[in-house]
Image (cartoon, rainbow, N blue to C red; front, side):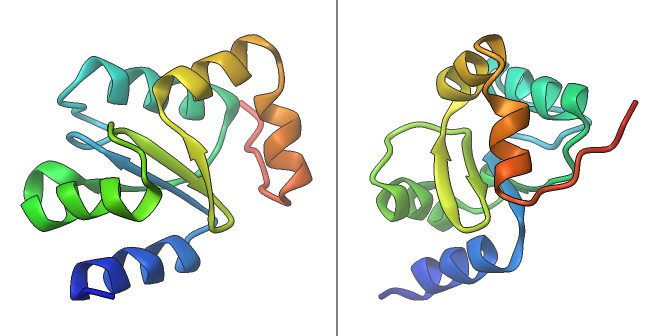
Amino acid sequence: MSDVQARIADDVKSNDVLLYMKGTPAFPQCGFSAVTVQILSHIGVKFKAVNVLEDAEVREGIKAFSNWPTIPQLYVKGEFVGGADIVREMFEQEELVPFFKQHGVALETV
């Protein structure tokens, strides 16, 4: 395992909810990242974000780590959930809140 893969694995393991995205939650750099941040914020999920634009190794490494070609990528309790389309679909189908609750992730009430 490369250094970047080990760093990613450690980050995924160390954070209950982790979003690899382009930009930051306050300033997303792509529409898909923005949609994902909006959904997570709307349902009250606290998450750590990693800006892949700051590190080319992480940007490429996360794609290999998950075997998923696009960013953003959401991880919950070490499990790869998916990208913006999957998060949006789970939200629209009202599956996202129960998913977080099943995984023991507390949601802040707004």
